[in-house]
Image (cartoon, rainbow, N blue to C red; front, side):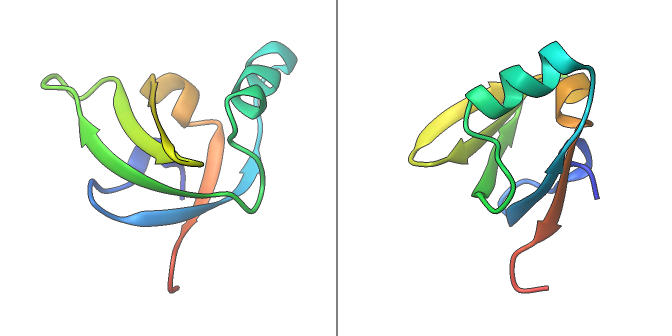
Length: 76
């Protein structure tokens, strides 16, 4: 599943980060690395961006960028 499809309030682990070189690098610089756990905190009123908690801080990310991050639900 993609991070852009994730449900609010659920926890996930990052499986893979894809995308064009500069986008992939930016996402990884923000802490979205394979194996990292995150929690989807909320969506903006119009559904974009989404806010996730990763490595102890809140990160807002556009759905277009979140679609490059493959995640699996924790406990699955």
